[in-house]
View 1 (cartoon, rainbow, N blue to C red):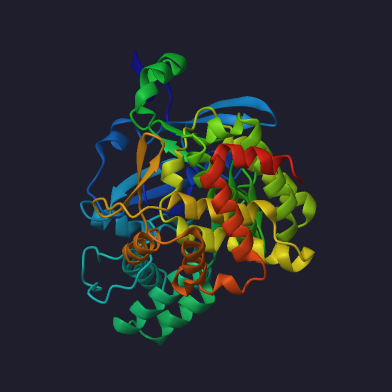
View 2 (spheres, rainbow, N blue to C red):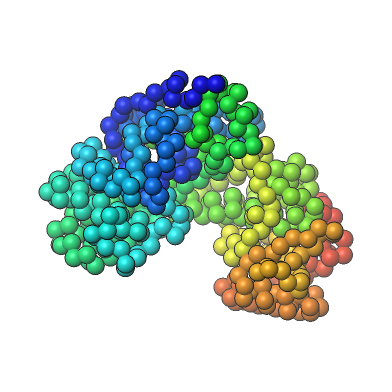
Length: 486
Protein backbone atom coordinates (compact mmCIF):
# COMPACT_ATOMS: atom_id res chain seq x y z
CA UNK A 1 0.00 0.00 0.00
CA UNK A 2 1.23 3.50 -0.84
CA UNK A 3 1.98 6.25 1.66
CA UNK A 4 -0.08 9.45 1.61
CA UNK A 5 2.84 11.56 0.33
CA UNK A 6 3.15 9.31 -2.72
CA UNK A 7 -0.36 10.34 -3.80
CA UNK A 8 -0.77 13.91 -2.56
CA UNK A 9 1.50 16.95 -2.43
CA UNK A 10 1.44 20.09 -0.26
CA UNK A 11 -0.12 23.25 -1.63
CA UNK A 12 1.78 26.54 -1.74
CA UNK A 13 0.13 29.50 -0.07
CA UNK A 14 1.20 32.62 1.78
CA UNK A 15 2.24 31.96 5.38
CA UNK A 16 -0.45 33.85 7.26
CA UNK A 17 -0.78 31.81 10.46
CA UNK A 18 1.68 30.81 13.18
CA UNK A 19 0.36 27.86 15.17
CA UNK A 20 1.68 26.89 18.60
CA UNK A 21 0.76 23.23 18.90
CA UNK A 22 0.93 20.27 16.55
CA UNK A 23 -1.67 18.10 18.25
CA UNK A 24 -4.80 16.44 16.97
CA UNK A 25 -7.20 19.21 17.92
CA UNK A 26 -5.57 22.06 16.03
CA UNK A 27 -4.92 19.86 13.00
CA UNK A 28 -8.55 18.69 12.84
CA UNK A 29 -9.98 22.11 13.69
CA UNK A 30 -7.92 25.15 12.69
CA UNK A 31 -5.83 23.58 9.92
CA UNK A 32 -8.86 21.77 8.52
CA UNK A 33 -10.76 25.08 8.49
CA UNK A 34 -7.90 26.88 6.72
CA UNK A 35 -7.65 24.13 4.12
CA UNK A 36 -11.35 24.34 3.32
CA UNK A 37 -11.19 28.16 3.25
CA UNK A 38 -8.38 28.03 0.70
CA UNK A 39 -10.63 25.96 -1.53
CA UNK A 40 -13.96 27.73 -0.99
CA UNK A 41 -12.99 31.31 -0.09
CA UNK A 42 -9.63 31.81 -1.84
CA UNK A 43 -8.02 32.44 1.54
CA UNK A 44 -4.56 31.63 0.12
CA UNK A 45 -3.15 30.83 3.55
CA UNK A 46 -0.67 28.35 4.90
CA UNK A 47 0.29 27.56 8.47
CA UNK A 48 3.68 27.47 10.16
CA UNK A 49 3.34 24.95 12.97
CA UNK A 50 5.52 25.21 16.06
CA UNK A 51 6.00 22.23 18.38
CA UNK A 52 6.21 24.16 21.65
CA UNK A 53 7.45 21.58 24.15
CA UNK A 54 9.13 18.69 22.33
CA UNK A 55 11.71 18.10 19.64
CA UNK A 56 10.81 17.48 16.02
CA UNK A 57 8.22 14.83 15.14
CA UNK A 58 9.58 12.97 12.10
CA UNK A 59 6.13 11.93 10.88
CA UNK A 60 5.52 15.45 9.56
CA UNK A 61 8.69 15.61 7.46
CA UNK A 62 8.18 12.06 6.23
CA UNK A 63 4.68 12.94 4.99
CA UNK A 64 5.62 16.39 3.67
CA UNK A 65 3.32 17.90 6.34
CA UNK A 66 0.16 16.48 4.79
CA UNK A 67 -2.37 14.27 6.55
CA UNK A 68 -6.03 13.24 6.50
CA UNK A 69 -8.90 14.46 8.63
CA UNK A 70 -11.68 11.88 8.69
CA UNK A 71 -14.99 13.28 9.91
CA UNK A 72 -17.49 10.73 11.18
CA UNK A 73 -20.86 11.38 12.75
CA UNK A 74 -24.43 12.52 12.24
CA UNK A 75 -25.68 15.57 10.36
CA UNK A 76 -29.35 16.35 9.86
CA UNK A 77 -30.38 12.84 10.75
CA UNK A 78 -28.05 10.97 8.43
CA UNK A 79 -24.59 9.46 8.76
CA UNK A 80 -21.87 11.85 7.63
CA UNK A 81 -18.44 10.80 6.40
CA UNK A 82 -15.74 13.03 4.96
CA UNK A 83 -12.08 12.31 4.25
CA UNK A 84 -10.08 15.46 3.63
CA UNK A 85 -6.38 15.61 2.89
CA UNK A 86 -5.10 18.76 4.62
CA UNK A 87 -2.32 20.37 2.59
CA UNK A 88 -2.06 23.88 4.04
CA UNK A 89 0.81 23.32 6.49
CA UNK A 90 3.93 25.06 5.20
CA UNK A 91 6.44 23.88 7.82
CA UNK A 92 6.62 22.15 11.19
CA UNK A 93 9.38 23.34 13.51
CA UNK A 94 10.36 22.56 17.07
CA UNK A 95 10.81 25.60 19.28
CA UNK A 96 13.65 23.65 20.90
CA UNK A 97 15.56 21.75 18.21
CA UNK A 98 14.72 24.22 15.38
CA UNK A 99 14.91 27.38 17.49
CA UNK A 100 16.59 29.67 14.96
CA UNK A 101 14.36 28.56 12.06
CA UNK A 102 11.34 29.05 14.31
CA UNK A 103 12.40 32.60 15.21
CA UNK A 104 12.94 33.40 11.53
CA UNK A 105 9.20 32.93 11.03
CA UNK A 106 8.88 36.30 12.82
CA UNK A 107 10.39 37.89 9.72
CA UNK A 108 7.71 36.62 7.31
CA UNK A 109 5.98 39.67 5.87
CA UNK A 110 2.58 37.99 5.29
CA UNK A 111 2.18 36.60 8.80
CA UNK A 112 -0.97 37.93 10.46
CA UNK A 113 -2.39 35.45 12.99
CA UNK A 114 -1.19 33.37 15.93
CA UNK A 115 -3.29 30.43 17.10
CA UNK A 116 -2.45 28.22 20.04
CA UNK A 117 -3.57 25.19 21.96
CA UNK A 118 -1.07 24.60 24.74
CA UNK A 119 -3.57 23.06 27.23
CA UNK A 120 -5.42 24.98 29.91
CA UNK A 121 -2.17 25.22 31.90
CA UNK A 122 -0.30 26.73 28.95
CA UNK A 123 -1.34 30.34 29.42
CA UNK A 124 0.54 31.09 32.60
CA UNK A 125 3.15 33.61 33.67
CA UNK A 126 6.40 31.89 34.68
CA UNK A 127 8.80 34.36 36.24
CA UNK A 128 11.73 31.98 35.62
CA UNK A 129 11.37 32.34 31.83
CA UNK A 130 14.00 34.69 30.42
CA UNK A 131 14.38 36.59 27.15
CA UNK A 132 17.75 34.89 26.56
CA UNK A 133 16.26 31.39 26.79
CA UNK A 134 16.23 29.43 23.54
CA UNK A 135 13.31 29.08 23.96
CA UNK A 136 11.66 30.13 27.24
CA UNK A 137 9.64 27.43 28.93
CA UNK A 138 6.23 29.12 29.18
CA UNK A 139 4.14 29.62 26.04
CA UNK A 140 3.37 33.33 26.74
CA UNK A 141 7.12 33.87 27.18
CA UNK A 142 7.80 32.20 23.82
CA UNK A 143 5.16 34.43 22.24
CA UNK A 144 6.60 37.60 23.81
CA UNK A 145 10.05 36.70 22.57
CA UNK A 146 8.65 36.03 19.08
CA UNK A 147 6.70 39.30 18.99
CA UNK A 148 9.77 41.22 20.14
CA UNK A 149 11.84 39.70 17.33
CA UNK A 150 9.14 40.72 14.83
CA UNK A 151 8.94 44.23 16.29
CA UNK A 152 12.69 44.70 15.91
CA UNK A 153 12.90 43.18 12.44
CA UNK A 154 10.15 45.41 11.02
CA UNK A 155 11.30 48.41 13.10
CA UNK A 156 7.96 48.75 14.88
CA UNK A 157 5.84 48.98 11.71
CA UNK A 158 2.20 49.29 12.70
CA UNK A 159 1.00 47.00 9.91
CA UNK A 160 3.22 44.11 11.05
CA UNK A 161 1.39 43.47 14.29
CA UNK A 162 -0.28 40.10 14.80
CA UNK A 163 -3.71 38.93 15.90
CA UNK A 164 -3.59 36.37 18.70
CA UNK A 165 -6.38 33.76 18.71
CA UNK A 166 -5.78 31.32 21.60
CA UNK A 167 -8.04 28.27 21.73
CA UNK A 168 -7.12 27.13 25.24
CA UNK A 169 -10.22 26.37 27.30
CA UNK A 170 -9.87 29.02 29.97
CA UNK A 171 -12.02 32.03 30.81
CA UNK A 172 -11.18 35.10 28.70
CA UNK A 173 -8.30 33.27 27.03
CA UNK A 174 -7.26 36.19 24.83
CA UNK A 175 -7.16 38.70 27.63
CA UNK A 176 -5.31 36.30 29.92
CA UNK A 177 -2.69 35.78 27.21
CA UNK A 178 -2.36 39.57 26.84
CA UNK A 179 -1.88 39.91 30.59
CA UNK A 180 0.95 37.37 30.57
CA UNK A 181 2.67 38.99 27.58
CA UNK A 182 2.43 42.41 29.25
CA UNK A 183 4.04 40.99 32.37
CA UNK A 184 6.99 39.71 30.33
CA UNK A 185 7.38 43.06 28.59
CA UNK A 186 7.74 44.64 32.04
CA UNK A 187 9.93 41.93 33.58
CA UNK A 188 12.29 41.81 30.60
CA UNK A 189 12.35 45.64 30.34
CA UNK A 190 11.61 45.60 26.62
CA UNK A 191 10.79 49.29 26.47
CA UNK A 192 7.84 51.60 26.05
CA UNK A 193 7.96 51.54 22.23
CA UNK A 194 7.48 47.77 22.16
CA UNK A 195 4.76 47.98 24.81
CA UNK A 196 2.97 50.61 22.71
CA UNK A 197 3.30 48.40 19.60
CA UNK A 198 1.74 45.48 21.47
CA UNK A 199 -1.16 47.70 22.52
CA UNK A 200 -1.79 49.38 19.18
CA UNK A 201 -0.63 46.98 16.46
CA UNK A 202 -1.51 43.61 18.03
CA UNK A 203 -4.79 42.18 19.24
CA UNK A 204 -5.56 39.43 21.74
CA UNK A 205 -9.00 38.01 21.06
CA UNK A 206 -11.10 35.75 23.27
CA UNK A 207 -12.32 32.66 21.46
CA UNK A 208 -14.46 29.60 22.10
CA UNK A 209 -13.89 26.32 20.26
CA UNK A 210 -16.03 23.21 20.00
CA UNK A 211 -15.32 19.96 18.17
CA UNK A 212 -14.74 16.45 19.49
CA UNK A 213 -11.45 15.18 18.07
CA UNK A 214 -10.75 11.48 18.56
CA UNK A 215 -7.26 11.56 17.08
CA UNK A 216 -5.58 8.60 15.43
CA UNK A 217 -8.13 5.73 15.31
CA UNK A 218 -5.76 3.01 16.45
CA UNK A 219 -8.33 0.22 16.60
CA UNK A 220 -9.73 0.98 13.14
CA UNK A 221 -6.47 1.96 11.42
CA UNK A 222 -6.50 -0.96 8.97
CA UNK A 223 -10.12 -0.22 8.07
CA UNK A 224 -9.30 3.43 7.36
CA UNK A 225 -6.27 2.50 5.26
CA UNK A 226 -8.37 0.14 3.17
CA UNK A 227 -10.99 2.84 2.64
CA UNK A 228 -8.46 5.58 1.81
CA UNK A 229 -6.08 3.45 -0.21
CA UNK A 230 -2.95 4.72 1.55
CA UNK A 231 -1.19 4.79 4.91
CA UNK A 232 -1.22 7.97 7.02
CA UNK A 233 0.54 8.01 10.39
CA UNK A 234 -0.98 11.45 11.14
CA UNK A 235 -4.57 10.57 10.27
CA UNK A 236 -7.00 12.27 12.64
CA UNK A 237 -10.64 11.36 13.29
CA UNK A 238 -13.12 14.00 14.45
CA UNK A 239 -16.84 14.70 14.50
CA UNK A 240 -18.45 16.81 11.75
CA UNK A 241 -19.71 19.49 14.18
CA UNK A 242 -17.53 22.57 14.42
CA UNK A 243 -17.83 25.94 16.10
CA UNK A 244 -15.19 28.62 16.46
CA UNK A 245 -16.50 31.76 18.14
CA UNK A 246 -14.04 34.62 17.65
CA UNK A 247 -14.57 37.70 19.76
CA UNK A 248 -13.90 40.32 17.10
CA UNK A 249 -16.22 41.24 14.28
CA UNK A 250 -13.39 43.27 12.71
CA UNK A 251 -11.40 40.12 11.86
CA UNK A 252 -14.10 38.49 9.74
CA UNK A 253 -12.91 39.85 6.40
CA UNK A 254 -9.23 39.13 6.96
CA UNK A 255 -9.88 35.63 8.31
CA UNK A 256 -12.46 34.09 5.93
CA UNK A 257 -12.60 30.65 7.52
CA UNK A 258 -16.39 30.28 7.73
CA UNK A 259 -17.36 27.85 5.00
CA UNK A 260 -19.90 25.22 4.00
CA UNK A 261 -17.99 22.72 6.15
CA UNK A 262 -16.82 24.84 9.06
CA UNK A 263 -18.82 27.09 11.37
CA UNK A 264 -17.07 30.27 12.48
CA UNK A 265 -18.83 33.15 14.24
CA UNK A 266 -17.27 36.61 14.65
CA UNK A 267 -18.96 38.46 17.48
CA UNK A 268 -18.44 41.06 20.16
CA UNK A 269 -20.17 38.79 22.69
CA UNK A 270 -18.36 35.48 23.12
CA UNK A 271 -19.94 35.08 26.55
CA UNK A 272 -23.42 34.26 25.28
CA UNK A 273 -22.07 31.52 23.03
CA UNK A 274 -20.06 30.10 25.91
CA UNK A 275 -23.18 30.16 28.07
CA UNK A 276 -25.04 28.27 25.35
CA UNK A 277 -22.33 25.61 25.10
CA UNK A 278 -21.87 25.20 28.84
CA UNK A 279 -25.56 25.07 29.66
CA UNK A 280 -26.82 22.96 26.74
CA UNK A 281 -23.93 20.69 25.75
CA UNK A 282 -22.07 20.37 29.04
CA UNK A 283 -25.19 20.79 31.16
CA UNK A 284 -27.01 18.01 29.32
CA UNK A 285 -24.03 15.69 29.79
CA UNK A 286 -23.65 16.47 33.49
CA UNK A 287 -27.34 16.36 34.36
CA UNK A 288 -27.88 13.06 32.53
CA UNK A 289 -24.69 11.03 33.06
CA UNK A 290 -24.72 10.01 36.73
CA UNK A 291 -28.35 8.92 36.84
CA UNK A 292 -27.95 7.11 33.54
CA UNK A 293 -24.92 5.24 34.86
CA UNK A 294 -26.85 4.16 37.95
CA UNK A 295 -29.64 3.07 35.61
CA UNK A 296 -27.29 0.60 33.95
CA UNK A 297 -25.83 2.52 31.00
CA UNK A 298 -22.12 2.93 30.24
CA UNK A 299 -21.98 5.09 27.09
CA UNK A 300 -23.69 8.27 25.92
CA UNK A 301 -24.64 6.65 22.61
CA UNK A 302 -26.53 3.88 24.41
CA UNK A 303 -28.42 6.49 26.43
CA UNK A 304 -29.61 8.13 23.22
CA UNK A 305 -31.20 4.85 22.11
CA UNK A 306 -33.17 4.43 25.33
CA UNK A 307 -36.63 5.99 25.32
CA UNK A 308 -36.58 6.93 29.02
CA UNK A 309 -33.19 8.65 28.94
CA UNK A 310 -34.07 10.33 25.66
CA UNK A 311 -37.27 11.65 27.24
CA UNK A 312 -35.20 13.09 30.08
CA UNK A 313 -32.88 14.84 27.62
CA UNK A 314 -35.73 16.18 25.48
CA UNK A 315 -37.67 17.51 28.45
CA UNK A 316 -34.71 18.91 30.36
CA UNK A 317 -32.85 20.51 27.46
CA UNK A 318 -35.78 22.00 25.55
CA UNK A 319 -38.06 22.63 28.53
CA UNK A 320 -35.64 23.67 31.29
CA UNK A 321 -32.29 24.72 29.82
CA UNK A 322 -32.94 26.32 26.43
CA UNK A 323 -35.32 28.96 27.89
CA UNK A 324 -32.50 30.19 30.18
CA UNK A 325 -29.94 30.74 27.40
CA UNK A 326 -29.37 34.30 26.20
CA UNK A 327 -29.27 33.45 22.50
CA UNK A 328 -32.39 33.62 20.39
CA UNK A 329 -34.68 30.66 20.97
CA UNK A 330 -34.17 29.52 17.37
CA UNK A 331 -30.37 29.56 17.70
CA UNK A 332 -30.46 27.82 21.08
CA UNK A 333 -32.79 25.10 19.80
CA UNK A 334 -30.64 24.61 16.71
CA UNK A 335 -27.59 24.19 18.92
CA UNK A 336 -29.48 21.70 21.09
CA UNK A 337 -30.48 19.68 18.02
CA UNK A 338 -26.83 19.56 16.95
CA UNK A 339 -25.84 18.48 20.46
CA UNK A 340 -28.25 15.54 20.32
CA UNK A 341 -26.78 14.44 16.99
CA UNK A 342 -23.33 14.62 18.55
CA UNK A 343 -24.45 12.52 21.52
CA UNK A 344 -25.82 9.98 19.04
CA UNK A 345 -22.57 9.74 17.05
CA UNK A 346 -21.90 6.00 16.53
CA UNK A 347 -18.21 6.70 15.82
CA UNK A 348 -17.51 8.28 19.23
CA UNK A 349 -17.84 6.12 22.36
CA UNK A 350 -18.19 8.60 25.20
CA UNK A 351 -17.90 6.83 28.56
CA UNK A 352 -20.30 7.99 31.29
CA UNK A 353 -17.75 7.36 34.02
CA UNK A 354 -15.37 9.73 32.23
CA UNK A 355 -18.06 12.40 32.33
CA UNK A 356 -18.52 11.69 36.05
CA UNK A 357 -15.07 12.97 37.02
CA UNK A 358 -15.26 16.04 39.31
CA UNK A 359 -19.04 16.15 39.02
CA UNK A 360 -19.53 18.53 41.95
CA UNK A 361 -17.72 21.43 40.28
CA UNK A 362 -19.21 20.48 36.91
CA UNK A 363 -22.78 20.50 38.27
CA UNK A 364 -22.13 23.83 39.97
CA UNK A 365 -20.86 25.46 36.76
CA UNK A 366 -23.01 23.73 34.16
CA UNK A 367 -26.37 22.96 35.77
CA UNK A 368 -26.93 25.16 38.82
CA UNK A 369 -27.17 28.45 36.82
CA UNK A 370 -29.88 26.93 34.59
CA UNK A 371 -31.77 25.56 37.60
CA UNK A 372 -31.75 28.93 39.33
CA UNK A 373 -32.71 30.89 36.20
CA UNK A 374 -35.50 28.44 35.38
CA UNK A 375 -36.83 28.74 38.94
CA UNK A 376 -36.63 32.52 38.72
CA UNK A 377 -38.41 32.64 35.35
CA UNK A 378 -41.19 30.13 36.09
CA UNK A 379 -41.56 30.16 39.87
CA UNK A 380 -41.17 26.34 39.85
CA UNK A 381 -38.18 24.12 40.40
CA UNK A 382 -37.26 22.45 37.11
CA UNK A 383 -38.06 18.76 37.52
CA UNK A 384 -35.10 17.21 35.70
CA UNK A 385 -32.39 19.58 36.85
CA UNK A 386 -33.58 19.09 40.42
CA UNK A 387 -33.54 15.31 39.89
CA UNK A 388 -29.99 15.55 38.49
CA UNK A 389 -28.75 16.89 41.83
CA UNK A 390 -30.36 13.94 43.60
CA UNK A 391 -28.76 11.58 41.08
CA UNK A 392 -25.39 13.15 41.86
CA UNK A 393 -25.96 12.57 45.57
CA UNK A 394 -26.97 8.96 44.87
CA UNK A 395 -23.89 8.36 42.71
CA UNK A 396 -21.62 9.78 45.46
CA UNK A 397 -23.44 8.01 48.32
CA UNK A 398 -20.77 5.73 49.81
CA UNK A 399 -18.31 5.65 52.67
CA UNK A 400 -16.06 3.02 51.06
CA UNK A 401 -12.55 4.31 50.48
CA UNK A 402 -10.41 3.58 47.43
CA UNK A 403 -6.98 4.73 46.32
CA UNK A 404 -7.50 8.48 46.13
CA UNK A 405 -11.21 8.00 45.47
CA UNK A 406 -14.43 6.63 46.89
CA UNK A 407 -15.88 3.31 45.74
CA UNK A 408 -19.52 3.23 44.69
CA UNK A 409 -21.66 0.22 43.79
CA UNK A 410 -24.07 -0.36 40.91
CA UNK A 411 -25.50 -3.77 41.63
CA UNK A 412 -22.52 -6.13 41.39
CA UNK A 413 -20.38 -3.50 39.66
CA UNK A 414 -17.97 -1.27 41.56
CA UNK A 415 -17.05 2.18 40.26
CA UNK A 416 -14.56 4.83 41.32
CA UNK A 417 -15.68 8.31 42.35
CA UNK A 418 -13.04 10.95 41.67
CA UNK A 419 -13.38 14.50 42.93
CA UNK A 420 -11.67 17.01 45.22
CA UNK A 421 -10.13 15.09 48.14
CA UNK A 422 -11.61 17.35 50.84
CA UNK A 423 -15.09 16.98 49.39
CA UNK A 424 -14.81 13.20 49.15
CA UNK A 425 -13.70 13.06 52.79
CA UNK A 426 -16.80 14.97 53.90
CA UNK A 427 -19.10 12.89 51.69
CA UNK A 428 -17.77 9.64 53.13
CA UNK A 429 -18.71 10.83 56.63
CA UNK A 430 -22.11 12.19 55.61
CA UNK A 431 -22.95 8.97 53.74
CA UNK A 432 -23.16 7.17 57.09
CA UNK A 433 -26.01 9.44 58.22
CA UNK A 434 -29.75 9.03 57.56
CA UNK A 435 -30.90 10.21 54.11
CA UNK A 436 -32.40 13.48 55.35
CA UNK A 437 -29.16 14.50 57.10
CA UNK A 438 -27.00 13.37 54.17
CA UNK A 439 -29.00 15.46 51.71
CA UNK A 440 -29.08 18.47 54.04
CA UNK A 441 -25.33 18.43 54.70
CA UNK A 442 -24.43 18.16 51.02
CA UNK A 443 -26.81 20.91 49.91
CA UNK A 444 -25.70 23.20 52.74
CA UNK A 445 -22.00 22.88 51.85
CA UNK A 446 -21.06 26.30 50.51
CA UNK A 447 -17.63 25.08 49.41
CA UNK A 448 -19.40 22.61 47.08
CA UNK A 449 -21.82 24.99 45.37
CA UNK A 450 -20.65 28.51 46.20
CA UNK A 451 -23.78 29.00 48.29
CA UNK A 452 -26.10 27.21 50.70
CA UNK A 453 -28.57 25.39 48.45
CA UNK A 454 -30.91 24.66 51.36
CA UNK A 455 -31.87 28.33 51.08
CA UNK A 456 -33.36 27.74 47.60
CA UNK A 457 -37.06 27.42 48.39
CA UNK A 458 -38.24 23.81 48.20
CA UNK A 459 -35.02 22.42 46.72
CA UNK A 460 -33.95 20.35 49.74
CA UNK A 461 -37.36 18.70 50.02
CA UNK A 462 -37.51 17.82 46.32
CA UNK A 463 -33.94 16.53 46.20
CA UNK A 464 -34.62 14.30 49.22
CA UNK A 465 -37.75 12.92 47.54
CA UNK A 466 -35.81 12.07 44.37
CA UNK A 467 -32.92 10.62 46.37
CA UNK A 468 -35.18 8.36 48.42
CA UNK A 469 -37.12 7.29 45.32
CA UNK A 470 -33.89 6.29 43.55
CA UNK A 471 -32.94 4.24 46.63
CA UNK A 472 -36.38 2.62 46.76
CA UNK A 473 -37.04 1.67 43.12
CA UNK A 474 -33.75 2.28 41.33
CA UNK A 475 -32.59 5.05 39.02
CA UNK A 476 -33.98 3.51 35.83
CA UNK A 477 -37.50 3.09 37.21
CA UNK A 478 -37.48 6.61 38.64
CA UNK A 479 -36.32 8.11 35.33
CA UNK A 480 -39.17 6.30 33.58
CA UNK A 481 -41.83 7.53 36.00
CA UNK A 482 -40.50 11.13 35.86
CA UNK A 483 -40.65 11.09 32.07
CA UNK A 484 -44.35 10.33 32.15
CA UNK A 485 -45.19 13.25 34.47
CA UNK A 486 -44.87 16.57 32.61
